[in-house]
Length: 408
Image (cartoon, rainbow, N blue to C red):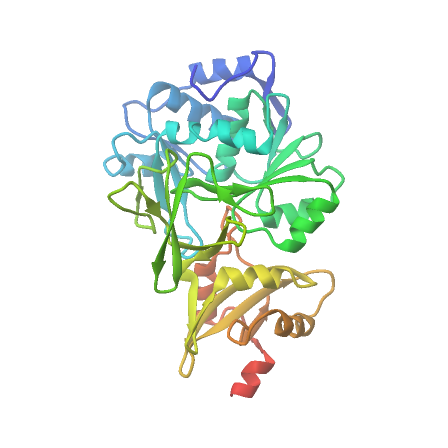
């Protein structure tokens, strides 16, 4: 059987939607799976049964067939000639800055994920006795990896938080779970930076946090216990100066083969790669990831990082989430615009007032919208959708900040 499936044949491997599948049953299902004829990639469409998706993925890896996770067979057939020859896993990703209608395909080997399995288990303290909950759809790479990692451990992967000993979640999802009765004592968190307030809430509950930064194209880059990030085991990190800051480059066994359909992945001759994220060294020798360089807003001669402003807005009382983008402005070049998702009965006026104390004048949004924050399937802010809605007027009327009124 393939390297991902371990454990005793009587152990529970998967528990999704009330269905319980033991290791032996899963192995038999993988062996009996019927794949499309030929040697080309096999499609796994959205919205299907998660157990069936796992069976198909494992069957493809077992038989040397590339598997396209998140799209139906016609798309897989159309991609056959574009995928690198050694592709085993092809994963759709829309990213945070592009439109949702133009997903890219990240091509990688199974070995590039397998190499990180033992280091992650060590960092997070996970083992065969765990019952590991995933909190998102399996066509999203971080959630599919979480299930495969649980199978590699010989643990149980489940979609039920009740009875789980660990959970994989984005910060947005964790914020909704952290105070619930069923919240496990261990959480693996990725997809965006955790806020200080969320870390404090988790610490108050005694939850052990393993936070990691990565990208679908790079896989694991840095990880930590919620207090700071260090290079993930096996990763070399290089910060390289660009116009808007220091760009984060990584070299490791975990890198993808390539991306079909464009995207931010760039490589150099020494084997390092980047997706354009910016970072800085912290005073204690760690790393702080600042956000995507293409999300930088140039306003009145200053460079503002959207993800940095979002993180600080999300820490304000009454803010459940925030999205920040730049829009063209005749005098400023760009002006900062924020969507805030209100929570707990807070008013937008309260949030704007608090933001004046938390942000510098350059960072302070000039226009505000109180709306739900659009997100990608992986939980990231969908800035492409925000920009489109802003340009079309679909967001409705904005509330100007006091700084905008004084500048007018």
